[in-house]
Image (cartoon, rainbow, N blue to C red; front, side, top):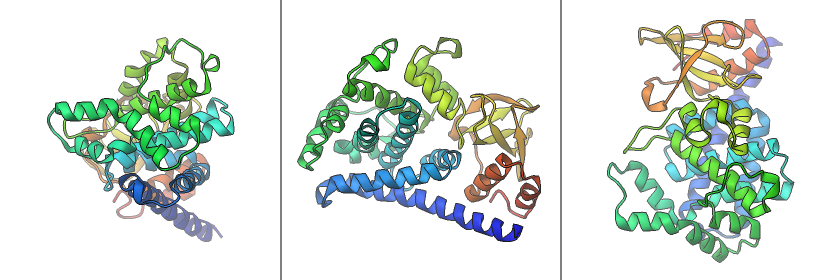
Length: 338
């Protein structure tokens, strides 16, 4: 029975990895050639439902795969960035108790906010020099251009359109979300998520920031979390979300597998020892219980390691279920990290 259960979950997570990559690919095709897509609004809705199904399956697995695949995306920065933003917006919509209609408009705006500059966005991710004057102008005008393109694609949801059209607008973080109009409330949520996702992602012109540095750049130090959206983001996904890398206080480099009840004490798997040697078998640490603990967050560009994502996700799930026997079986097989 145990073997059958293990095989079932192995297939399940292999499917989850493939489905997440397929979703990213489908979104890329939609964003690259929107005018060639029939029933565009319906297609976006289908991608949204696909995303919801993947997240509800296992939110920690979804976060792990999202952050890991985004850093190694083969379909382009535009699609991976949109998918990260949409996933985080979906999670925050639940945490902030948004109405279903607001949640739908927010997530679909996240998927399509940069649709008028898809090609440029992919080019900029590989560009080593500062944007030219023409590129800067395209960046400045793309919210309204994206809104106009969505109208050409027969998007009728006014809230979706409004949020896309003003998603770079700045708001005071001290104004309660509940006091804002629906359009302004969703714009502030999406704007925060957009900046966070952009900071954490690497470019040719710069390395991505660590998760903690990205949060601090948006909302300030831990004792100054005045921003309601930023605070909710940290509470929902942690200071170091699943799929990001950390340095432990024993010198090891680890990947975060799952969140815990406290934002800065996740379940991690050590994958590189203090001497810089990649471990053949991941070593699990429940940082909320004992040493070692997280010393600092690491940008993805600072870590050179190849992971078997299916194995890491399964290890995280089994650890969460306190199945030590299963974990030993999982991580002692040859090539567990590869």
